[in-house]
Length: 97
Image (tube, rainbow, N blue to C red; front, side, top):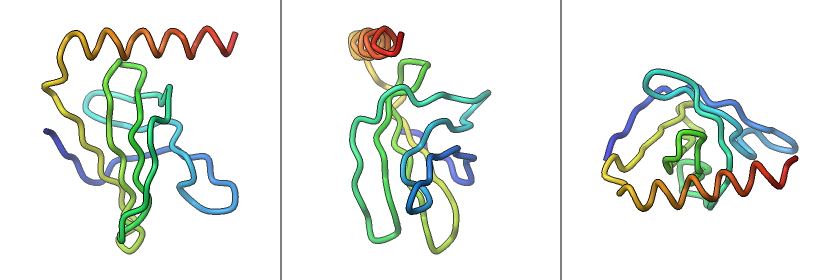
């Protein structure tokens, strides 16, 4: 599991900040959020499990008190999991057309 602090996250913010992440910078570049899989609230702030355009699942967590985002991913996601994620990404993209 890899966790990184001080990540830049682009969010849709309707009635509150960090309502829904749309993109984030991680590693060597920007990742676009293709599917919001799950959302929940921790004592520190909102958390999101997302599928990104690179086929991996990430957890984005916003620490409201520190005004800081954290991102984590499980680097051991199997090839079959990535294939399933890619299929989901393609299905979502086809729906938008």
